[in-house]
Image (cartoon, rainbow, N blue to C red; front, top):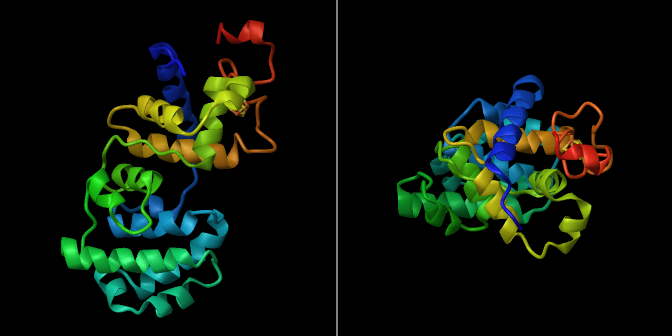
Length: 226
Ligand code: SF4
């Protein structure tokens, strides 16, 4: 996959950040940079809608406000407290991360991609989210929403159908992160995919990406002028 031109990258970054300033959601995990709190939100949000996570996120942190406190609980207690979020391997992994952080990192999360990815159940996405949301690094994220936005804007349906695996999309996501703005940019990408460029009803007519989006409904002949 060819890398997008610098001017297109800059335009996408600018418009996405402007969109986020206007439409971004006010969520409790966006008011903290505490790595543990970011971790809890990221694990709860896996395959679960924001509305369902909100009350559980607050309740969980009231009960276990730190990694150390969580490590003192039993895995069974944590699994029961997770109800009704479902997908029960998540609380077990979160609990295992707490124990490992206490055993190996003095009750803190490591702040490197390798250290994070060595923790139970932490993949490339969660490591990128923690690095950018909790540790202020210029790391990329690629989840379902981000994948949809990037393929629609930069590839279009035909080139997306030819994609094999996520390697090229990770490279694209990394190329797009503006220096020093990974936090806002990644939050913006995820919100944009979740609330605007949605799977079934993308809001193409008023979309700020419409002039250059490879999947926008306007004729291809006018797209290049963006
Ligand atoms: S123009 Fe439509 S498909 Fe393209 S980014 Fe906007 S909402 Fe998504």
